Image (cartoon, rainbow, N blue to C red; front, side):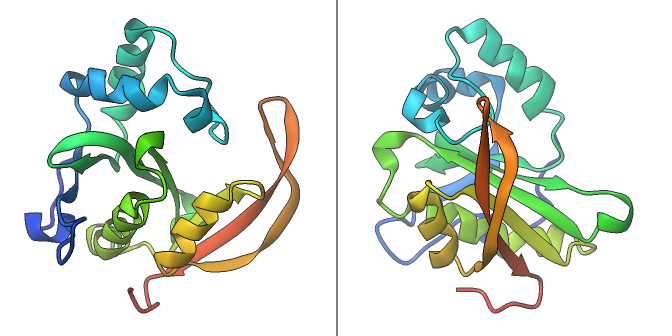
Length: 186
């Protein structure tokens, strides 16, 4: 996994009780923390994956998908993972866009942790990937919590994409959010 090229203070949010939220590479040694959210059906509800049922499958996922990912970080509280966040590169004519994804253990929902993590991504990704002009996120129309995270982090709601994807066997409407490299940061 690629190491962060920015200084550590760019990857830590300060100023309040959430000041111990940081981003760092997710590692195999984080498996027990990973299993907290990865085994939770409520966390996986709006995700493309099903909850993990054993450590071996989770370890294989970390080895084969997380570690080689160009930009996937653990969302940490006091350096302990409570979730993950990623930006996936596009290629060709779409190289100017990247897709944001994030997941957080349910016991931390509604406390501002996901918003802080998304703000940290917005603060650093356009520096680390200067070719990126647009960061976008697709959120299920029924996932109001995730929509609020993006709005509070300064993303613009662009509209609903009807029957946009199949998620867990059902056609789903998705809300498109974006943040441009030129947009002001919150």
